[in-house]
Amino acid sequence: MDLGRISSGTRAQISHLARRCMRSHSTHYREQNCVRAHETAFRNADDLMDPRVSVLLNKSFDGLPPCLLIVCELDPVRDDSYGMVKKCRNNAKTIFYLAYQEALDKAGVKTKLTLIRGIIHPFFSFPGIYRNASGQMINAVQEFMASL
Image 1 (cartoon, rainbow, N blue to C red):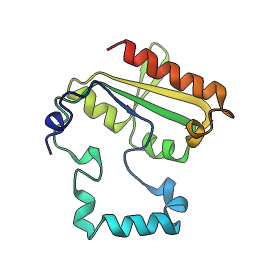
Image 2: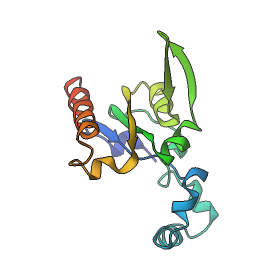
Image 3: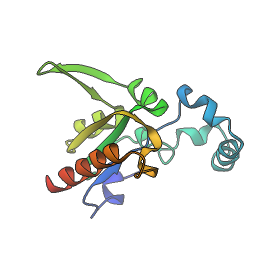
Image 4: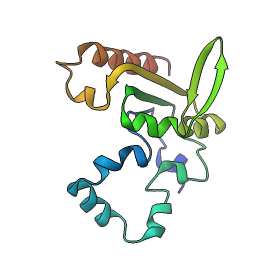
């Protein structure tokens, strides 16, 4: 799949969701509506290797727009993402590169990872309850878009 062609004209991408489903999702994944959706979407095991299922299965990430990745500290999906992590030390801070961010970096795509500390995955659905975290996310998006 030619992601560069598909995304032509797109100014930026902002991701708050994990790129694939793994063991840390096993409890939620067994929910009946998830099972039904999975059975409808995937006819056989070969479908799971289709790049349209997971962006990470693409061979090239050239030509994609800049990407802001938003990850929550207290999120089962976060553990999933960090299982695909490459850690490095830079200026005494630990920087985590998600597999998608790493693929984009290798393709020369501008990326930024924002970790919202002390918060759960669906916080963005409850801005009245999680005002501070919602504000952090809005600021991250505004700063990222302004940097383009």
